[in-house]
Image 1 (cartoon, rainbow over the protein chains, first blue to last red):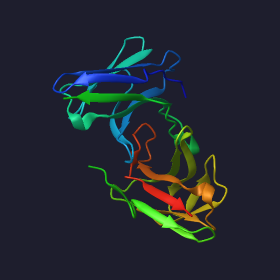
Image 2: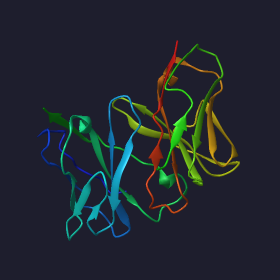
Image 3: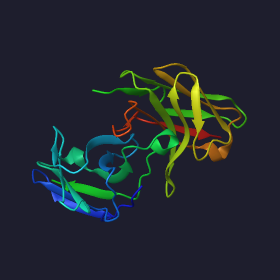
Image 4: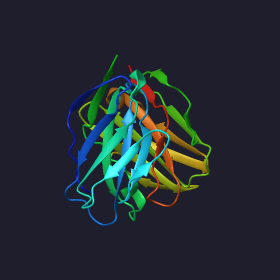
Length: 114
Length: 113
């Protein structure tokens, strides 16, 4: 699976949009981009994923550049409860067996301030 | 919404005890996983199951076993608990189509004294 690079930390004001970047310059054609977050002492929470088109759900939007080498997770109106570590993961959508496993990097600690 | 339920949020056991961690998912997913998460080491796969009674070793299976007698339930067993198995244990599930995301439970923070 391709490696990802994320900033270690970001701050955002409550009510404003939080834009979390992720670089995945070695991504290959079969690899999807997944975003998870983890609030302290809880299990990771799935947010959104995509292959090449932009995606939106009730939690967030995912913008993937045309060359697919980077993406941005957008939380449109951040709240204090969005404070968490956010992980960007790239993995092959055709993999199987124990290649299903997820590997989290260090992620980005997003702090939403009042 | 997918629901993955782990039996305990916090558990304290003694060295040498046999420990059972239970995980149940309600979405009829074929694949289920057990990970442990430790500071600085990230997420590590212990065991994976792709069907009832089927299992595969992950990256760190030593000292653990698993059981999947029913599709919705995946159990992790620490045969003889040791202090180095103190960790956060996470269960996850995903449908057979591999591009679908894994959904995690809330985790079990296990302390072995």
